[in-house]
Length: 230
Image 1 (cartoon, rainbow, N blue to C red):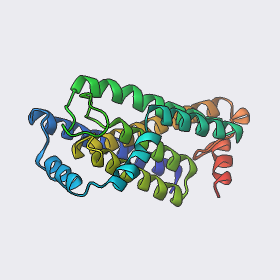
Image 2: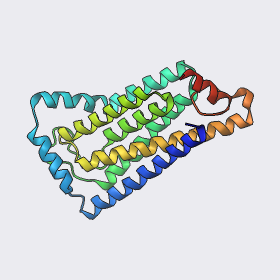
Image 3: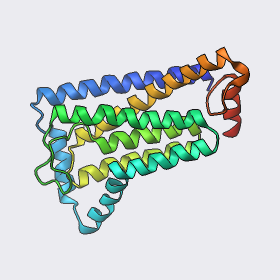
Image 4: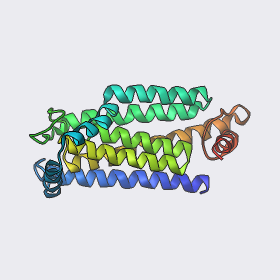
């Protein structure tokens, strides 16, 4: 895909995710923040399939994708990109993680949707959107955009779906909460990546010879980043 076309596609995906999030938020609000019919159906399914082994497995992504886990993972990934001298990639990943948390946590507190009464994890009324799912999605999508490998996208999709299952299997969220978290993560990753790519172009245009090495789509620095991913 050509650089400009790729950026437009990512931007449109971000816009679509934002619109879908807003619509879902309105549906939940108009419903008095009570579980939607699909939430009840999915919750009952999770309860019916609950096992001790399943709970242990579900706690793995819940712990790894928690606050401490994601801070550690984020620092490691940013450090790896920095060591590879892909500084713009490091900045992009760090910015995405900061923004998705900065937006999601206060929003969940303001909306204050009550979690399922039988939650096996958190009990605080910050159910919508799912922070675990938002961060998992934002991280997976950003890595996919930066590394541009099909298997990165595939593994990212598995991780996101696993996180969505985990949070609902532990009854920590309604299905609409994790869907909202996924949409938030997609939107944040898309907009932050797009904005930083535009910033890179502006800086490269001012000083082409000194453009930094990293992943991207056009210009000297972008071309070298693309070569690293061939």
